[in-house]
Picture 1 (spheres, rainbow, N blue to C red):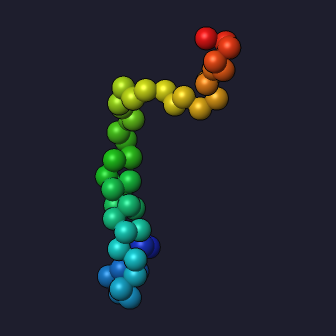
Picture 2 (cartoon, one colour; picture 1 turned 45 degrees about the horizontal axis):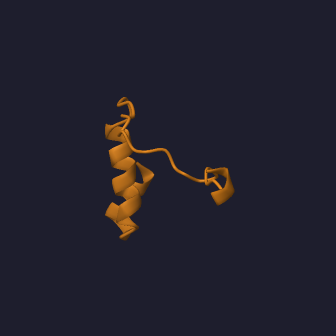
Length: 50
């Protein structure tokens, strides 16, 4: 709410106000599993281990 007032009164950063409003509107919505692949970090195999 403060970020929205800052934008309205003093030409503050509009992105912060947008993020705050979107978080307030979606606060009771759960995250959805998007079906993305797991990251591969730390899972590389050496040639000799294949």
